[in-house]
Length: 203
Image (cartoon, rainbow, N blue to C red; front, side, top):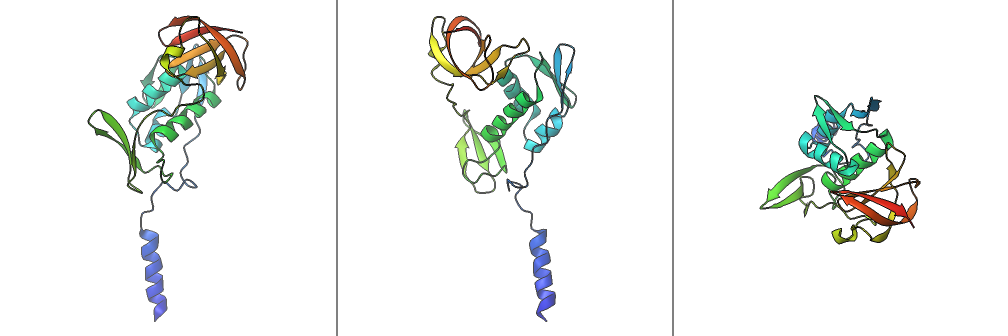
């Protein structure tokens, strides 16, 4: 008489909602991107924001900051000023996922952004862990006073701009390096700073 019991037990276990954070099953859809005139259209923007369970405005603000351009949400898609390729956007989406979605303790995406005073926390429903949401520093990032006219630094080129210049990120700044290629480490001198954009020359 154990078979019916075991059968019911297995059925009960199968009906338990597993956390979606099993990284083997959590998949962010591939970005569908195409160039339209002088703009880049991120066709499935809303779908990816929904998969990540994040507000579209928050996701869009991050994308614009990382790309270093202006843009808008247009229905289910996002439109960026300038020409950017799919691999570049997917790299940024992956960074967003790691910084604002994936729990750093259990590695699952079952998280929520919650406010604790002025601090935004990433709270995990799977393990109960939480941490302040703070963009993780990369080897390119340092003190903001590094990006000043006349300063010299070594940066890593992340991608190419629509004009073919290499692009690196240092903190909130986007640096343009003429003649540099993605993956290269380049020593540069800051020649001009305009807002969060910095122009350089290779040393």
